Figure 1 (cartoon, rainbow, N blue to C red):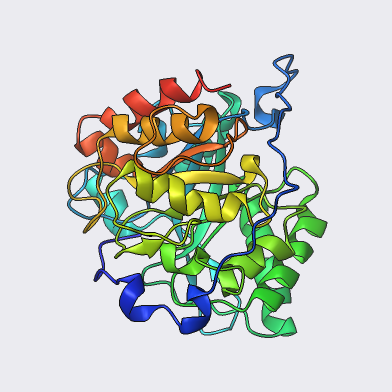
Figure 2: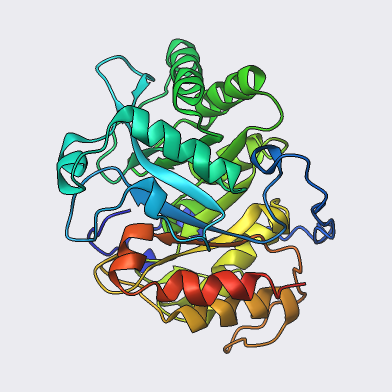
Length: 342
């Protein structure tokens, strides 16, 4: 998630990924709407369209925040990050001491209370595992079982609603799927599972991240790919697009939408302004244009999808902290716009 060297599809894509993509012409937009007659806000489902933001469990140049300071526009908060141990598959978490110092003290008990308060307000809070420097490995059945056991333990202890897979150093789609299914078996049907692949990971259904998404499609909540820190990539029309444009978002989202994922399982992940990423920063209004292009067929650039996807799930940003640092423009612009989508 943090800034890293830019790669170009023209230099790193294997030849196999340059082959024409298979188009799924039978997929349909999700037209269901979430009920508003909630008995308990904490048990309510996510909205039809929602905004996800990552919250820093570390100190860096962005503003440090307690969970209680997360702006109201965010529907899903991804806590970054759960950490690896020497045991393959094991995930741990605690409030980072550096963050605690930076905010004048923040205990695990206070963090848990803030998680509960967000949930009482109708928000969801999940644990993101991995990140740019994450080293969590799930490469066999034993590691898969340990991943499921330890993540479920953290969900029970801290109150997390699910898990975000942000493994930027490779993953095994077979055993990670096994781990997530085991976690689903423990947590139940309300488990939220999100994924945050890089652009290179979702260029083809042959990629491990794409395979994982399809392997767990029946229990997957959403894929919010990182449309940033990227070089040029191929769109679903086999044309090359550069980051930082409406076309980059829509033409790459089209790959996922036409190759097995439902519209409600696809969201757009963008940086929250200067400092949040090394490349691909766009104005929040540009994110809205891309969402309109996908949902309505309006606001498109040179690429126009062959059909619309009214069920497109929403947007994600790295990060809540950077958004607050930059004046809240991302949440303040994109959040309300999501409520206007069909």
